[in-house]
Amino acid sequence: MVLHAAQVAPQLLVYAVLLEAAGQRLEDLGEGPDGSELEDELLGCDPSLMPGGQRRLVTATSALVLDPDVVVLDEPWVGLDAASRRKIERMIERLRKGGKAVVLIDHDMDLICEVADTVTVLNEGRVALHGPTGEVFARKNWDTLAEMYIRPSRAALLAEMVGLDALSFEELGSKLVAAGDASGEGEA
Image 1 (cartoon, rainbow, N blue to C red):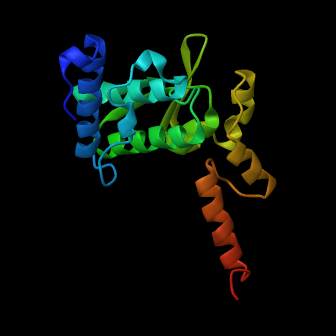
Image 2 (image 1 turned 90 degrees about the horizontal axis):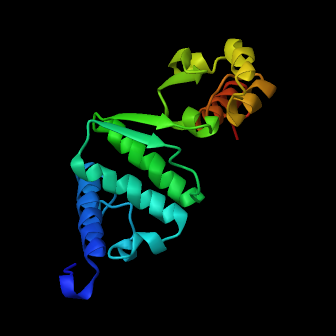
């Protein structure tokens, strides 16, 4: 894609260059056949005219241009549709596999339990709980979390109802399949 400065407002040209560089960074991180989570039609678009979800996705992706060692994402899923949420989750996974530290600040425990390996819970400016996600959200901490108005993930609540221990729906699904196989129900 070649853009001419006379055809496009200067800020759009800069943004298009950032998006193209971000696409290259995603390719370097090994995403998909074309390397990009961003649709081609977003290149050259005025970010102020994009829907909020697309704007947030573009912003998160363009932050990768500088190849930081630590990426901080503050409520990255707010305003995103399910497809864009999956793109952010894949981006986080690629960053982690690439040796980057990803710091998520969010109130959505379902998504935190899906992607985080370590959790720090702050209460009144102090660390209340810290450790592997499975330990922080273990059943023994549910009362402590409730005192801070934090609920376990929906997958954890459902798992408890069926007598299992799981934090994410993926983990719960695997345990349900394993439980079915162990009881012989998986045989045809």
